[in-house]
Length: 347
Image (tube, rainbow, N blue to C red; front, side, top):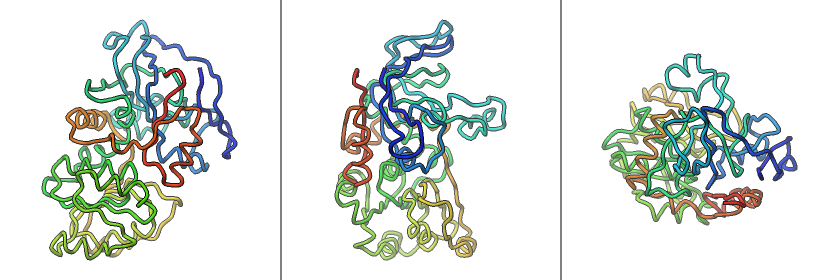
């Protein structure tokens, strides 16, 4: 079968290869991958700004249909439409594994980075990681379950957004837009979303078609004044930082109300940033760093998708063959695409 393999550092360290089709172990199923997405973290990997163990089949956003089951698999059958959590290799005994947070296991080997992932035709995974796709959710939508689960983890499981909150989401990429939709779906009174001039090509026009209350281009409009107006001078209840931009991160505290909450999700281009620490102390704010997702978050993501509380289809701007993954990277880097979904040649 064909797969996208990252085999060394550098942009020339990627290629489509023929690899051995996996066979499911006794407690595993084999999934025919029906759709897979390009994540921002894979764009970081493309620039060698993400850890990985070469050679590895890339990809952690994917879904599909079960085509084979192991001898000890009892709860799943051929034909079931499923997604899989990405905690395929964890220790199972640490504090985090035993409390339902294997995403934080120190021995975890992330799918698509340190163990083979889903940019391929077939993928085997343990049955306990599977979750059923609702019948009314397409494969293209289901391939986005993982990024939706990042939002449900940060906002619902972590309990950061409450009924009636006024929420600012910084950044209008896929994660930013999904967080904005999830915040609105769970009862935020008002959601404000930011972007910049470069986002006027694709991202902001899509955002304006969604159920988001206020869209702000921070290079053309005064965000501070808009926040003051929309909150009656009180300040924001919650800021979801999904931009990774230095200026946006530095300016958050000033926009926040006293006792407000900052939810940190976005990755930055560099590890160290300037932050107004004293201002955050004086506002007695909460900073909630959120990484990955628990099983509960995956279930909540699919529930919102199945209930059509969030609309993912407008986010998908391009569908391309898996072999054209470099084109997908180029579209994302030039901001010509928002979400790129890929299909293997034997889809």
